[in-house]
Image (cartoon, rainbow, N blue to C red; front, top):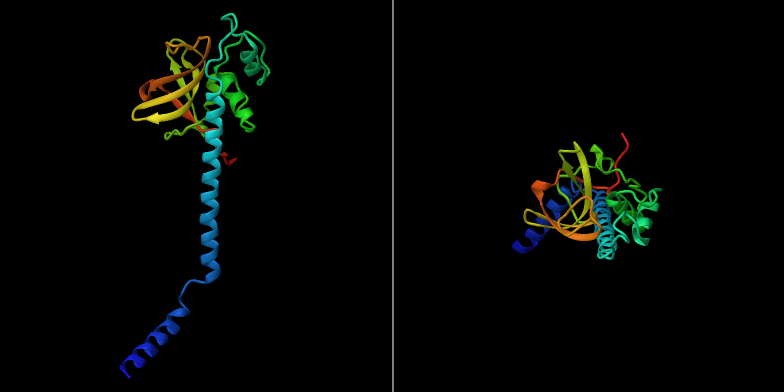
Length: 194
């Protein structure tokens, strides 16, 4: 008898509280929102991996005569409508993003790769970084984050060399300390127009 009363009591409480339970439709909406966010994160991660893979595939590219020339270097420059002979670290980054199917950036002038709306303090693989040169009073070299390792950025860079010069002769993997980097830019996420 006591068991029956207990069960009836539980049903009564559920009946009374049932009207206060969240609507099943609202719960489904929240679940769908969470699923969309997860899918967005997965798609962004896959895109970042594709960008890094494209850049990594260019490791070893060298200028033909040391004068910002050669088949690959000229293809990078052509992707932003520049001809042979121009500095190409920004062109390399724009070319990689183009190959990954992104509409932007299409910029060779390195300071323009870092507009305020693209700044990030938490760089991820595929994001860009800029190095400031006091003599020039501007960001004058850019590269891509391959991965973060403690206080170090493992990077993929065009128009550099073994020493990390901004006037190098090829595409290299570098290891740069966070202190040496002026800005990071995220061109992968869409920026809302204001």
